[in-house]
Length: 338
Image (tube, rainbow, N blue to C red):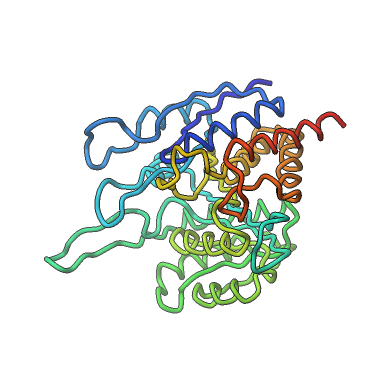
């Protein structure tokens, strides 16, 4: 079966890791017709319209997208293209599986947890204004609708994938109304899944617990901001953002992306590690029903890391992008011929 997929290569090292990922997917025999398009609008544009509207239309048509990293200005500049894509497409569930890769050095072994983050509201609603000079107000938006649907997504996912425990992360001891509403919504959904153990943790305690003993966690369910922070924290426990995948899922379409930076210092030098985008592509393959191909590529990727001969500099190796990609392709070929 041929699949129509939007490809947003991204910026910086994005096009390089996208090319490597495409080579591996094609070698696995997955039939994909790529519609490649830029995520950012070209040329001068209105301050609030920097995302490429054609990219949004493409994802809506194809219902599936693979996306490389996009740069976001700090303390000024245009709004985040990443956030604009997720909100425009109502990709309300951010899914981050976090698991050790054999051969990648980390502080812990045996980490295997899944983070589910609400993706459309909270402080990421972008509702900010200057009250008076020197005083800025940002609005934190929490709704029962969004909190309930992300909770249902998390508990449905847990049931389908055999996960046994979900921690809801909050700061309801201080933000009693907003985070309180989030918790009440989650509790209502949790009551419908009695086979899944449900617990709650205040976010600062959860961060401490995570760095002390991540093995105690199975799934985390969080509002947008806490989810952004804790998913990156979790990635740091297994080797960093370069070795973890990410999916943004809605009712009508899904976008799978590398969430690491654009790495402008190495862009164009052939040194980038395509693992994060490749692993995100594996989530995409599962999403579109290409489970066998996903399993073969996953096995080839793990074999490459276990052998440790052709790994990239970010994980302690010396290989460049092409050498790493070729090693995965060789491993894939060996697995396919068995």
